[in-house]
Length: 318
Ligand SMILES: [Zn+2]
Image (tube, rainbow, N blue to C red; front, side, top):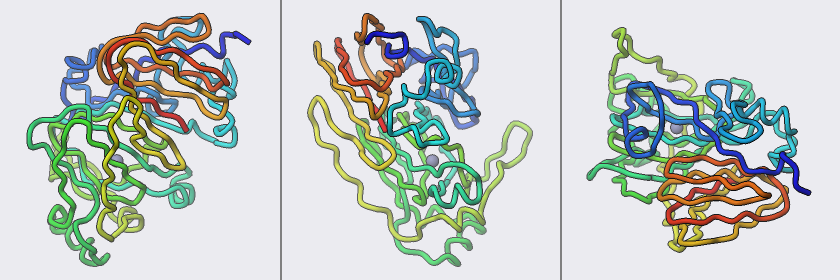
């Protein structure tokens, strides 16, 4: 059956001009914004802090929440029917300078303390400056006392696991893993739909009013895994590679080289982020042109769609 609710839709993001951001999302990823700095673009978001908006077609101008209210929750797929919140938040992030050192709670803690989801996240590195690095977990086991002391005396970086970054790298960050994206890194982030961040160190930076950003040390001490970081797994190559798979999401990297047919089922929607090149998606009498930086939502349904073109797409589902 071919109805308006099973057509793919193109999305425009919500933008964030956080102080650490750059301009590459505008210059390299075709993002159109009046903001001078675009730190983040929220490419698939029904989060109250910034929603994506439908572009073109019958639902042009609808926010993600308005679109779902109109067509029904079935577009999210059977796996999402029990969920209280939209399941994913997908962003592009341009870190011109370092992001704060932070940690996110798991579902149990977030539900109890924040009435929200926890946050497990994944980063796919789209671009980086030579020598760029980030922090991922601890480099050794530390006691809670030592961890707290190092936060208090600004030496916490010494016990973090510092990793050099290359284009194409994948980092899977379970809730409880302390982390910080470093300067000169542009990533696509796939995460649970939660905006709960416990900041433990911010390089003593000040905002434009001369104030430091708030730290959340007690909560961070509650949720941080104080063991060394899990080993990073190497992603296999190929035109269709799984970058990460966990109970919250599965993420694939598709390399486009001509036409390819992608199967979809009724258990989850697909989110497509065009990370390189140009092409198109065709499904149910709808054709959408794709360019680097574009975001498309494909409603859950039994069927398939055709991708054509040259480039790379990050496909996420729950
Ligand atoms: Zn984070």
